Length: 339
Ligand code: UDP
Image 1 (cartoon, rainbow, N blue to C red):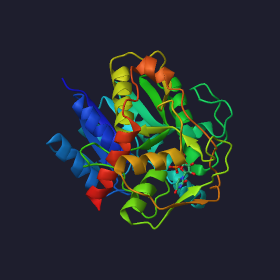
Image 2: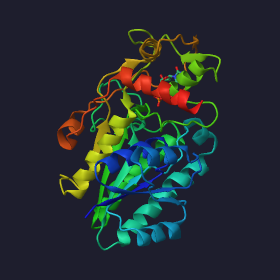
Image 3: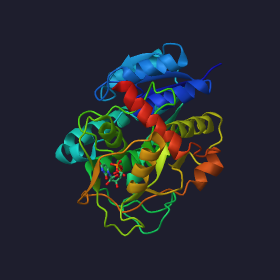
């Protein structure tokens, strides 16, 4: 019998790509999303890619009764929890909104999970932001977490801890936290991708919107960092590769392959790329010139961070495969698709 994975926040950027890869791997997927930060573009794209309609439950995970009802309606074998707010700046301005939404939704999910007699496998979408600024690069899963610099980052750390402690206390709950580096890209079909609301905070959507003329000029934040070309270094992970890491993690949980009841994996390429290198690669692969300028450093940015993905390579049997050129061609195709 097919196993069913619940994807909370499954209509969003990462959730939609994960839904496609889970379905391709033979899982049934139930999407739950309150649509607070997205429309149905990606959901429709997912259905088009798969050639069938998937269940989309419009609900808020902050509503405990709705979460209970969801688990009564569907027989769920594993949950991937994406439903969370994610804008760093907004979280600084509206901390309570972030703490309420990101913590309550996750707690509700775990409350429901612990009541089930069959237990539950829970995958939490965490972030490399938990590592903060560090000199010891690349970072491994045992690199110390630094105090969060924003309420958003803090909710990622707190949810990791909530999962760790719940796994310890409640029999039958198993958990994996995946720490993403910088997810970028779009599906090769150009039917799903990132849909930022308003002015994008992240680099790649800002690049594509500048290239298409929605933004006048990209500001490169800081060119006097102690890096080879003076711009920050990041580990840009292709969204389809990232999605496949989730499939491997779900299979590990469902197939009883976990070595601990709570595990953490870095999901990155292991290769740092500078902002300037990324911009140049985007121009080259898409054969265009981008309007950009150097601007002052953005507050809160770390100089450099990239993953040591050895543990995920070894334990999940997963490795980042897509070339950066293909990823940057895909984001441009997506931007043109939604134009
Ligand atoms: N960045 C930039 N211009 C932008 C957006 C981002 O120069 O308009 C830089 C940012 O300073 C950082 C890198 O691009 O060095 C990645 O930023 P992003 O916000 O995409 O991800 P983060 O690493 O902050 O999570």
